[in-house]
Amino acid sequence: MSLTQTGDSDICRRCSLQGPTCCRIAHGQEEFCFPLSQIEKERIQEHVPYTGGFELSPNSAAFIDNACRLFPGEEDTVRKLFPEGKDHFRLAVDSMGACRFLGPEGCEIPQEARPYYCRLFPFWMAGHEIIFFDSPICLARREEKTLTRMLRGLDMNKATVKDLYGRLRLVWGLPPARGASKVKKGF
Image (cartoon, rainbow, N blue to C red):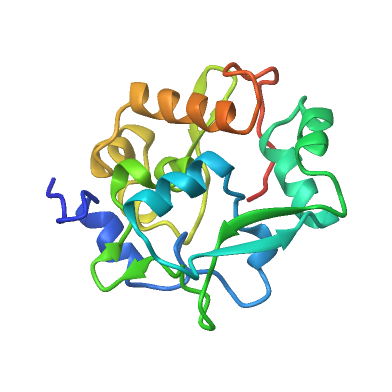
């Protein structure tokens, strides 16, 4: 497996140049971008002093519903974190739906400074089990097919996924352990 100069696996670099991918979204789907915590936003700004890379988005009913699907059994907590009528930050996209931090060789944010959701995708946790989103937009999913091969192809391992997932939960004010065991389709 080879890594690019940005620390991405070759499969991520190749995927980022396609569309749609996790780095590119269809017009009108911006509200489904995963939110950034203040900690993640500040970390990105320390590494990539780029203005225009963030956007304030409303906590719409559809956004909240999708966030609740990612954290089943914790819907009350998620609704408190993202109350309807308030806003959250997300990564900004250009007029073609590409993340503003997406460059010709992939993500311009150093690996260690990226949002946890970006670093985790296409993986997630369901209880103590690592799962992956069955996303047709993910080249790793299309090429590697199994969890073991996807982890290897993306230069990750189970411990890394568990650690990133726990960190994501913590920056959002959720306890590091999940309360429910199944993730519903969403994000």
